[in-house]
Length: 197
Image 1 (cartoon, helix red, strand yellow):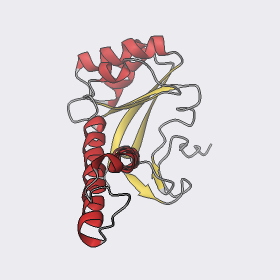
Image 2: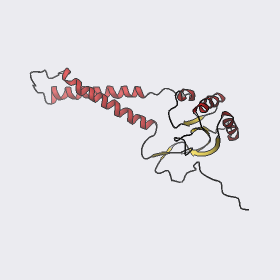
Image 3: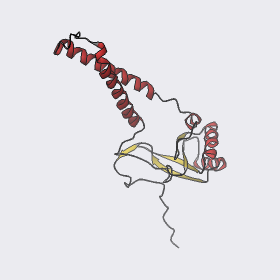
Image 4: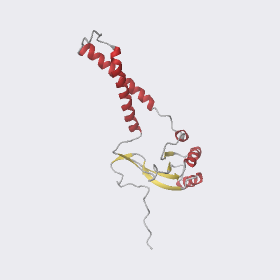
């Protein structure tokens, strides 16, 4: 994975963070991500994120469950093991409805959870870079990628003017890795070596 440079700004309040995100986007800077201790209504729209397609995936998983249930029960009761139960026809659709409903819900629920975990890279063994140790505690953290068109000093001054009370530069891997957080990595707490007197 390639390491990239980021300028990280910390905010104390969502009322300061929200206008800062709009200012950063209006200035044309590339926001890597914004970390908040709780969901901030409208932040995804302010960041320019597109609407999730998770509901479409849920519909596809649900249709798959419906098709699986109806196909399997139809095959069992008409071809594999046809039984005369109380004089009902072999293809008794009203009797299939409860199982079809349950399998539809099961497929859609499990499928959406797994899809969500895959898209957000969530798993017990997946680790990602932590830009600030309090980013999910009580701080609002914005990470902006340093590109060839923007310099780190320019971004630091911009974030300070936008209301960030703490601004620093980091080098981090944008992807994820397998293992523990205490592996060798350039984290936020990296301190320069002391100067000899």
